[in-house]
Length: 482
Ligand code: TXE
Image (cartoon, rainbow, N blue to C red):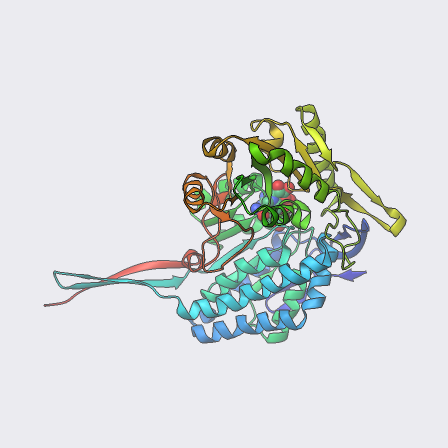
């Protein structure tokens, strides 16, 4: 059985305690590798290595740091299929999705920040009385980067890449549910000769390794993506220690469809925005709001299309729906379908586990599910389900659409479907979200800030904003005689 190793001080090493956790393949439900059950002792080793590396790495020429990131990007590309296969096997997502989206984007994260750091500028301000102010943006120290299981390498890399580019060292922890691509990334770092201690990857449970990172007094920056509840736990630890904190949390995103939309494009994209990665993307549109004049037409067409989305073997090229990431998560999703019925919803399709054992797949498959007839304030429409379950409901006009869209404690993303430019701008201005897509979904320009409002998180990832997050601005003011 393959044992994944920690990557500390430039070496792939076993956990100090020599203990391991079973790593399951969601499609088969079987253990296919082992991951280190690390603890605070392993985190201590990683912090020591990062501390020793920081003085040289932080003073390394930006071009040199940039070249390391570029090499990592190229190596991920060279090993694309291996990474994609590992991602699909670890997470249960279709191999086609991992190959087309997750892995190319992870490679792009490294290449983007290898160039962004070269162009990262800071500002200066002249004063009439004869003084010049300029801002020094300096690396801070060790960044703690903690990521979830839904887009394992993509979300892992877009914390690590800017942190390293900015001159920090990193102690990172991937999710214990999907560790494999982070392990392959360690191999790439060894392969390209990344200076030891610059990046350290410690595998293990959140309550052991994750908390050891967030509590560590010598890790002044925490960048976290995961559940809102865990985000709250981390904030409680980090705030009194005055740590810099970036929290990318959950979402309950509205997809708002007006009668004047480009119907065919909307229908095709709404299928994707509802069920991509089995609905396990924080940006998925899980509450579909449709103008009442086209509600019945949409409902019939959408349900008919969803019924074609049958879960299958993630390795098969034709599979568009893979397995959910764990048995526990599948049970959580199915419990929400049960709750929806108790709250008065009608399940129009799906809502049950799919048995693929005849194909030798004893994993965790759920039929994509559409539910109607629920009030916006019920739990099903208020809480993040994070699976292949969406609700649909009608609205009369823009006012009702905005009221429904903004009716949850989250504010991550929204999609608006209309061919009316003024309407799209009116909606974009009023929706509580960090990202509003108009006539598209998941179109990401890395130069733009990414993040949510309300309980979807604090801070921004992406763009130059995240380089500002990973550096400390120092204002220098020089008085001179005019
Ligand atoms: O997240 P967790 P999970 C939502 C989604 C999902 C729920 C739980 O609703 O059902 O969160 O998912 C580490 N201190 N999102 O279990 O538990 C943990 O080991 C420090 C939305 O993945 O938050 C893992 O590496 N770290 C989200 C990471 O935190 C801790 C994507 C995320 O785990 C910790 C994923 C602790 N006390 C889930 N406890 C999005 N916004 O994309 C756990 N961890």
